[in-house]
Amino acid sequence: MLTAPVVEAGMLGANNYWECILDDMQGVKNDAAANAVSMACLAKFPDTSEPTDVSTPLFGAQTRTECFASYGKEATSFSALQQIRMACHFIYPEEADHSAGDYLDPILDLAE
Image (cartoon, rainbow, N blue to C red):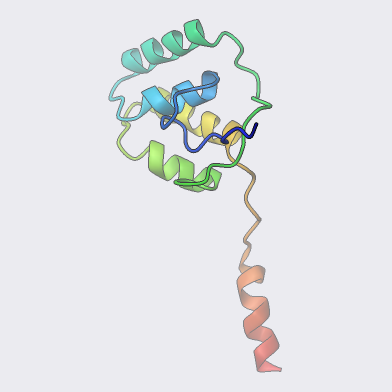
């Protein structure tokens, strides 16, 4: 029997602490509320280590940067934004290092 991968945090419900953070921390406006969300997620998912059963989502954010832009755009609490950033770090794949050289190399090749 085939099982469907996690589509996006929130779509099928959280499977771990970090997905719970992404689900519930969006739009949090103050640190007290962020702490309450963190404690609620900890009560549901006591293991805060890096999840091992995470698959790349089919829809929505595909990278850490896209994750943070999507989930952090309405949060104003510094604590909430830190938690969202950490969750994106654990759940989404690393991004390629896009230094200026990566963008200039093809242009310089054409100039030769």
